[in-house]
Length: 115
Image 1 (cartoon, rainbow, N blue to C red):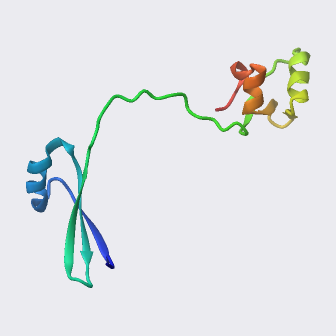
Image 2 (image 1 turned 135 degrees about the vertical axis):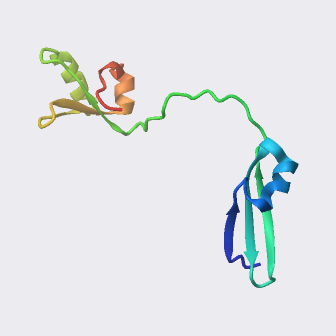
Image 3 (image 1 turned 90 degrees about the vertical axis):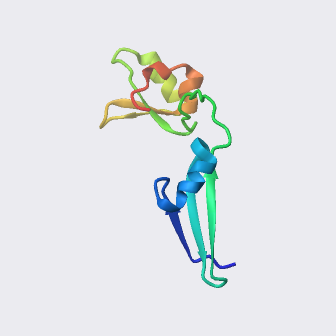
């Protein structure tokens, strides 16, 4: 079957009123697919199957993302720790850069400037 064009029917359109009556609040969308070869129109519906509360978890940060760290001028030991873990000092911006996985491993997540 070769489908040529798709058209969305909005829930307030005349052709969708019977569908709205049939499915009620579970209805999300009505679509019309036209098949010019067979000269047919297919009507599809998108329904809500399940609705339940969703608790968002912390935003996922890729482990290799370079993080910017704030280290005060006198904290030489922290700077050495970052450098020994593969981090480097960004002279232009004035902060340390270190991959996120290392930031977490060293417990330096409270020093992160960017996310």
